Length: 171
Image (cartoon, rainbow, N blue to C red; front, side, top):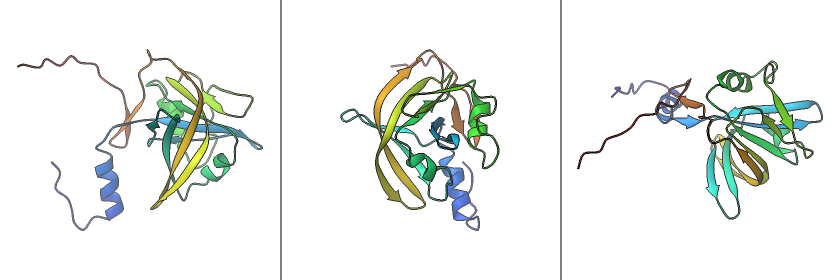
């Protein structure tokens, strides 16, 4: 265990504590009037089977989310373990987030990162204010998956890989 420094900034302390929980890495992308736009998110989670919903959390200070939310369709790509470079670029504040990243779009403008383990073609269902973030519920219209591809993991402020191991439980 790490001792908590009570003098440490509360936001920094919370970020460190939240970093103890591993998450997958997804990209939320679309084609806007100006071209491809997207961002990496690590707050993706399943919500509902009926209707089919998933959620992502968007920081209220994001300059990318206002553009994405205006698009008819969004592509959510669950990045695979070999896509750390794409994950890093999609989390940049400036520069070409799609450099060296292969992608394709649907007729409705959803953009998907090629080589991802799953794709969800979505539209915004609802937005719920939550402190300095907004919880965005996305309605799933279609999906594709490659279950043999391991996901990219974010843990402790770093990209990581899953490690398979057999657990032997003694009774």
